[in-house]
Image (cartoon, protein in one colour):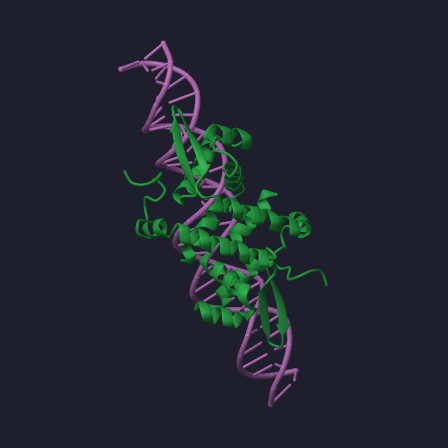
Length: 112
Length: 112
DNA sequence: AATGAATATTAGCATACTCGAATATTCGAA
DNA sequence: TTCGAATATTCGAGTATGCTAATATTCATT
């Protein structure tokens, strides 16, 4: 079911959530730690975590007052690794994508 | 830049575009072929292709009246392969996700 | 140059996402 | 049982996305 895959990608389609998933690929973290390392508001982090939870991308572990999040399947971390690889290959065009903004949808291939 | 990765994921975060990318991973296709095999309107396909173009995910080749699309980097196909793998592993929960709809955001782990 | 096929773009509406603010829950400590 | 810390949920406004219908473009043929 392609809708499922699309759902996973959609969950990853946000810088904050990518950060969270990438970080949780290394070690589990509490919501507080996530907020701190990202510099975002608690409610906001919690919302993003809810998205990842709803897609069963992360798991939780309760310890006293706080909740530890961890990645549920290392496969996702591999996928993000591949994406890093992709990122490196296309570095240059990324640069130009970051500079130009408005007409990026009109560009077909290279210049000329 | 995490925003770049998020952009790629966002481009993949739609069933139609996943289909397109998966298919183009195998062979190049014209817009007409894509429309036909997907059973969607031409304008719709063209819009999705514009999204993929804007992210430099696909390339085009013009031949007479029609335009052939192909995947630009096989790495993306590998990423989708890994996603298929992920899909297989989590098949069961996918099923339940498809059945239940409204409260999927509230579920934390399994039942009880 | 006029026509028709293939593809692209635009406009407008409906839906979904994202964020901040406010409020609710849960749990340990007193 | 009350209080404070950690986390979650809800609400509202602003923005983005996706679809359909209509219109534009591009190219080969005539």
